[in-house]
Image (tube, helix red, strand yellow):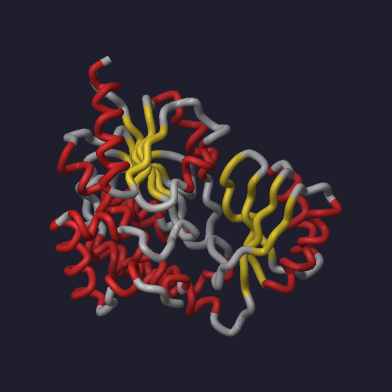
Amino acid sequence: MSIKCAFLFAGQGSQAVGMGKDFFDNSEVAVDMITKASERTGINFETLLFEENDDLEKTEFTQPAILLVSSIAHKLFENEMAIKPYYALGHSLGEFSALVSVGALDIIDGVELVNLRGKLMAEACDGQDVGMMVSLGLDDDKVEEICATQRDNGLKVWAVNYNAKGQIVIAGIKDDLKVLELILKEAKAKRAMLLNMSVASHCPLLDSAVSPLSEKLDEVIRDEFLSSVISNVTADKYNTKKEALDLLARQLVSPVLYKQSIAKFDDEVDCYIEFGHGGVLKGLNRRATKKPHFIVSDMASLQTTIEEVSKLVQI
């Protein structure tokens, strides 16, 4: 039978020192990709990925590191199994990795692109003490209502990542988020906690980054989609450069509709394959779908995924 696989790619928060090391130690393909990415950007990815450092937590380095490792994982899988994704879906930054996986973005161009994206996001937030917070246990409507009420009161806070049922990430000014933390707890949130983030993603605080990112997107996005990608902005499929240019620019300042995307298209696929470190999206999907979910994060999990997906193909 033919199998319909959704390819998944995580965003910031999935990074860790050592990610991709097993690929690097055991694959010439991985060595070549890391070498080329280092040459293009001037970033020493061997140091960034494999040695203890502070840069990996800075968004301009986090983003290319995650995309690079996720794309290596996908490339090694692709070299072993000729399975085209039914669609590709990324969480925030992961949408750019998804574009690499369907051929709409060259991997090294992608590394350079998201390095710029990270710089532009950091510059947009420079001089403002910004952050992000996770709220657990409240319905979407309640969190949105609280944020809207507090914006009317002068606070800068926005619901920006719809990750899973009862899990929403909020972005804004850090002092305003601290005020919101108490309000969320009073509203019976199970948890309201500031995250270790130096930017405020997917909200109007990033308006100044939209135009320069759009210019770079136009240079590197290709009109060569092997499969559709799910937009974080609309939770709909797209497969043209024109759509990508619009949606990826808007993504900077729009909420990530991740759980809505999974819910909308879950019936169309047989399984999920997550590429990259951490298995973050498997955790988010746990209550949203009963479909098999495989992870490719090192050579062992690559082999396991190949074996398990091969079984599904043979059913």
